[in-house]
Length: 323
Image 1 (cartoon, rainbow, N blue to C red):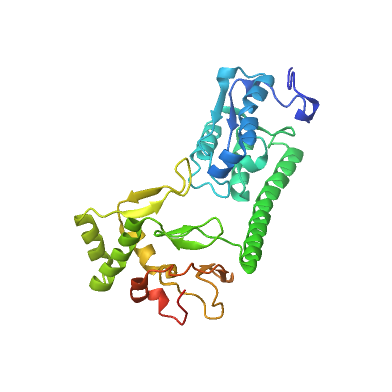
Image 2: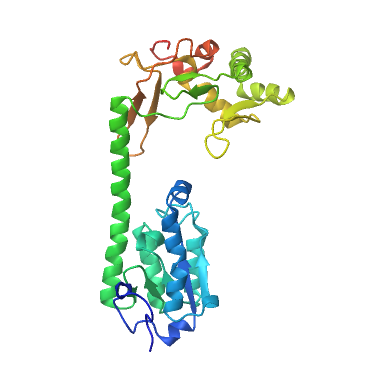
């Protein structure tokens, strides 16, 4: 009985695990990348995952019996929420329609032990095999189940290690004054790293108008109604894509106005112990975890603030200096 015909030696342990009763059902290839940035920058990983269709054919499935699920491209594996492709996979296995699930590695399927062991239970119950780049596994067999559980635990642990390293890196860059954040409407970041007023005079005038209106009405709703009635739109620099950096005009809404009015950068507020800084932001954590405050040590360019914002911005009432 054929198991891994035509495949390289590293494709398995476990010859004989793929049986005719498995081939009578579907083979599902699950493809996932964690973020849109990974999809753009790490295209080889995506190609390798799509190539698993050929591996299923090597295992004896007809190509039309191989189902490709790539609904979760750009989705994190840390949770099942929002991962319609993974939910569809679990549903198909639970209906007894799947004989084999293929993923380039276990972390593609899930980075949460809860979601991973749920999949293992269902696969064991409905006699569904799981395969990755290292081999073919039967969740109903004790040794394979033990190995799959270890792989799932390592995938979840790896996620926490990656997050910890990224946070430490951000903190180190912040201490050196090299951690740049995206600037809000009405500002641009120069190649030197300095933050300056948007060179477009209409953009500057629109931001000043928003603060003047709020200083007069003291109501975001009234500001929003005034902008809508006069068809005044907010200036936004495209954050990415082919038009990155280009000025776009978006309709005002309550969340965008609120973020604009409470952002301390508009008034040049800084922490008093860091008089050369222009921008502070916090990383708040719930529960017993600590709260970090990162500060960017890059000065404003001369005159780089909106004076009316000092009167309108409630976050600027604390002690501080003008940038």
